[in-house]
Image (cartoon, rainbow, N blue to C red; front, side):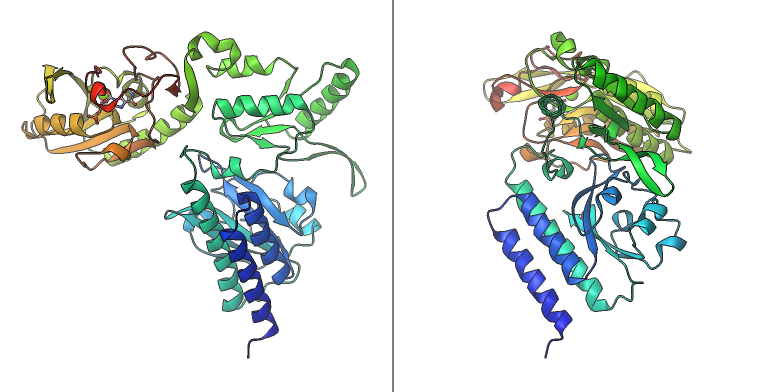
Length: 471
Ligand code: IMP
Ligand code: MG
């Protein structure tokens, strides 16, 4: 005979499965899962997701938790309780005595004693977790833990089937699950602009207490937006002078009380200046001319390259590599990458052109390397690998010169049309099946000087013709 608890868990799992296979929105499916988890365990529960560069955790569905706790701030992924880092269930028995809990005081005020965190895995990678907050010290049985992790697995399945139905692969899970009820049309405009430029945002992410009467908070301030990859809060204002004055006062107070917080106050049209500062937005329109959507912003690229360079510096700590670039698409990538690499290195180039015959196209080297690579450690640096034909040709050419080792570092990898499969050692971004330009990449020699990577507003060049594109 199943115990009462088992029956409760069974019901919650069954409801969650029904939600996952139903036609409802992803947000609704996740809500059923989180609510079922919370109610069955007689606790609060939330679903937190990693933002795209995996640095912050954001609450995106919750049940039975006070609003001030949800708006307490976004834990840093690497400092927070570490289920998302290790991919394993983590139990914090007493939050008061565990330094991994970043907002201990707030948690205590909400009556929370223990936290159980179980990762949500998508394609082998943790993307967030389900957290259960109990008011009694946790005496978790195996059964309890397996229940929470089953619910987390169901959340993973909901994400997977959601993303399979999406044409654009780089929609972050975070963006798709936010409840968006904007208080003001200008906020919605701002969110749309951020979406177009593929900047992640969180709406009304956090409330900052500003005034207290004893223990009671009597005044709070909730900025409109948080932009995780700039680590910046943004408050939009209407033009009404009376409101602006009050807001300015609150902002001054906030800066005094929370000096580590970066926050900007934007007057109605000011956000265009902010966007222009990062190389896009209506004020940078001449640069974005003919662009359908930005795939990776200047900031995204910078953050990613920093990580790749760090890894290369570590891997080549005691070897002096030769970086070999392929003209001309690599130019921005190489320039930024090599300045972030901290070990001594050498630099060389190869230039190629494609000769298109009647039946097939042949790659030909028009400028060879100047350095002798025999016995050296070579890193081939490429902008994008598509079919793999170009890279295959170049690697064979390099191997014939007998380097001690040969690695490949590419900024963009588009696997979908791969013909020659080659091992890639360092990959910047996996990109969807879209032709891309900018940051060195061209379409008929246009767009190379854009500071971001974007999908141009052109019909996709037919595959055959693409062979004629110069590198
Ligand atoms: P592959 O030989 O098919 O792998 O093609 C690699 C070369 O084609 C790259 O070095 C680029 O120069 C060019 N290429 C492939 N895809 C794109 C793209 O989306 N935008 C711009 N150039 C591209
Ligand atoms: Mg190239």
